[in-house]
Length: 550
DNA sequence: GTAGGGTTAG
Image 1: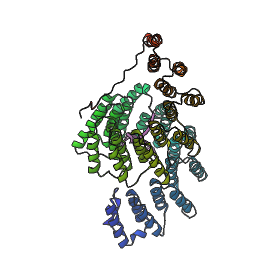
Image 2: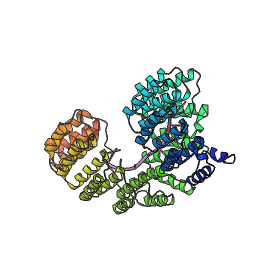
Image 3: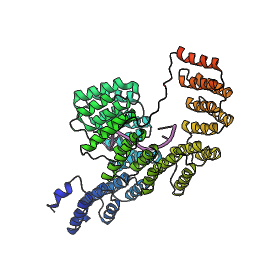
Image 4: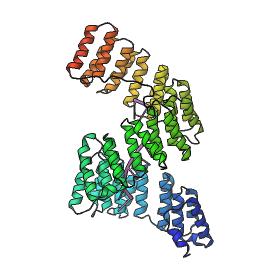
């Protein structure tokens, strides 16, 4: 028993060690002891072995609140929310009543499952059982309400407590940030400091992550300065939040400097930098950094690989993508859904749809994103009927299509000129699947109708939309007018766009092309003069083949 | 009880 204690106190247990430990504990009849049973349940949960965790829980006769919490947390973390709730109800009927940690764990599960009703019920329970000022349950409530966008409800909980601890401050600061109120977060940060509370890494990450709009760069730099002065910058979470911040604002040299200043940047920080380069359009730099990371022997995970595959999909050469596919095998990530979906997309965008389909077929488990990737690839390659077969397959498997599924399908209809199929899908998307129609769906519908020569029908669709109509939708119609040489409608459409966006030269160029097609050179000149007189310049389009020589 | 990087569509 004494010999076992060091084993028990290990914070990390591999699956095999847990099994051995379980066998040893069983031999000494200690597995019936709720203390050891709780430890084992936690270890099993850590190793995603929820079945063993449950078996052990059921066999333990004396169940303490810790054991109940361990099994409930195991289910909540495995996203098995219904099971977690059933256990909670079962627990409430026993003599062992739920405590603040039970509530906190279930409250977290609620926001992870976007379950506002469940959250309100638990909030009621917290109040009834006298936990309305408890740090543990209140910080969980503040985070949950904020993550669901209800920052006012979060504030009520926050200000309703008698006393505030650091976690509560952090939860509220981060809550304001994730709801878009970075200024309120900063106000709280200053108030907290004026009350003598010292911020920690959580506080700073909450503040930094709320800075989304690029005009907030000076605020971000100010917070970065605070991190440097207080030495918090060396915290790896803060470091990666800063790398992401500068990447969001496309200040890649600052992002790179933050990473270089860290003693041992971890995988997440590298991942933030590589993704930053990719999202700033510097795909080559993203790919080269990933390669150098590989050369150093650092083990990439599914998130980094998926992200770097997005960069590989944007270039005209499939070689980097193939190289990354090699590292997918080396790291044993070939069964990962996120990685496979990114691989399908990369292959189809690089022109190797067949390889993408092979990846799709080899997937042991598929989700809606994998289907979206393959449907999109098929549509992009003009194979609409195969895209529809995939769509039927998706439905027959009981998967729920999302807005991207319909974008991919409508795009396939556009490429193949399938007007009736497109209309039907568009209606089903709204009526049967209750998916909110977005601008991109309207753009695709307008393109589908317009390219098929049904310009009036497309125009009627745009007129039926609530005002103001996005310029992208009008622009799609204008380009169809250009293709069909319809200057009469083109002029009407262009006027709508000029009213919305008088400064955008690209649409004037489009209209001037329609005039040029009809030989109306005076009108062409007038439009071109309008552009240059207004000090505008259309950025010329470029195209190239294998420009990177990777 | 609070924190960092993320695959598809556009």
